[in-house]
Length: 139
Image (tube, rainbow, N blue to C red; front, top):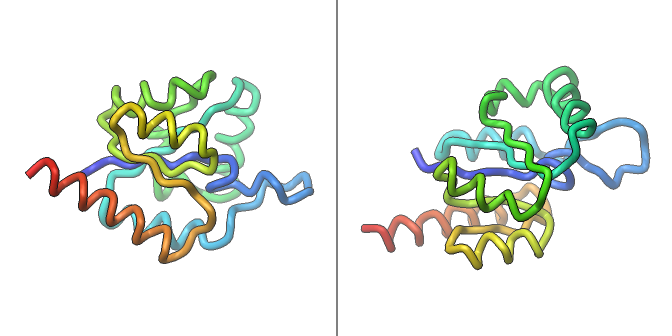
């Protein structure tokens, strides 16, 4: 099963909600489950150690994300450029991220990147199409 990674802040967790709560982006659980049916999912996030611990707690204890993506597949990096390194190290083919600069960096290293806007069928179709193109190239 092909591997894809998903950023956390701004993709899974709504970091712009103007409250102290860590809210999920709309439709996150539904679309993670749809992706999980076709791909081996990882989380790949850039943050500091303190934010990593807070994020792990929120994802496990409040949103139960670990029931969809096992915590052993949660990768946290301290530098944004290390996202592509971890993708290569874990044989992850595609990253969904809300930062264009990160997507551009991933793509410049012959990996796939999809810029996140919202969890919806359009995003899902873009992911499916990118992965299908990759598989067609490899056949």
